[in-house]
Length: 340
Image (cartoon, rainbow, N blue to C red):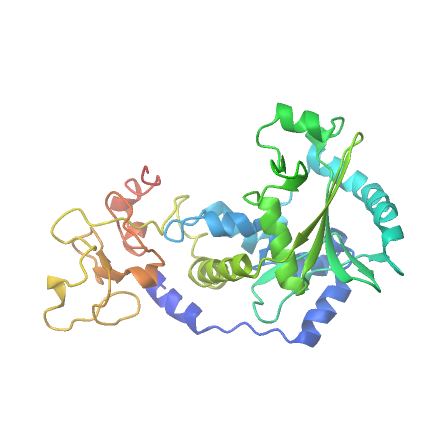
């Protein structure tokens, strides 16, 4: 089955999870990584920790390793000194956090949480480190970080020695906040979107310091993440889950797209290739909007809609459609992402 045939099948698939099913999954997976079900329900879903990578990957050039790590999470498990340190100290950090905040709330509780699925976007999942609740403020997600490389540092030292450290000082308030461009911020916002809560506690613990920050839900960011995630899910994740599309290919990104380098330019709103209302693209529709052509002269489909490829502007270099990229004569030409 070629990519166009596979994509048509994927576009017809509807993933449905009821509220009752979502609650049952969360309840059954509260042991998280120690639960076989936790690993099973993560398979094929875009999880909170992967969200920034999914949003930043080129939709026409998605990372194969990213797609495979989503489709086969158990195969991508790894242990390191950093992960072991985080696992060993998360419980202690939870206790310290709860002791710090509980006195300011009525009937405060901090409970374990499982794998959450939002039935509205069932292809996205999240596993917060806990759910905080109280009678005065309601519920909030909790995400805890115990950075191994900063384990013996204060945050002032961490920021002065590491310009990429995810905590930054707000110049107007002098307070530490999580960098909104960091993957952890995407992770927290995904957790809020999936759990349908409005508040999160982001906690960073070291042996010398403790950071507790309240982060509110950003609905605009959430909607943007959902849209990008859905596109990657349909055009890349489902083709791998259903047809092993990436597994059957050489280790090269096969969905790159770039402009045609001639009078065939896909920038044009009207094309001479459409004089007889011919049908083009995977969607088998007539010419419409901006289009791009495959540089393989023998390509069966030839022209493709920007919309179907998920692109809004023309990348550089020659471009071969997903089906043509599987041909041996073009694999060497498609092995690297075009320079920007």
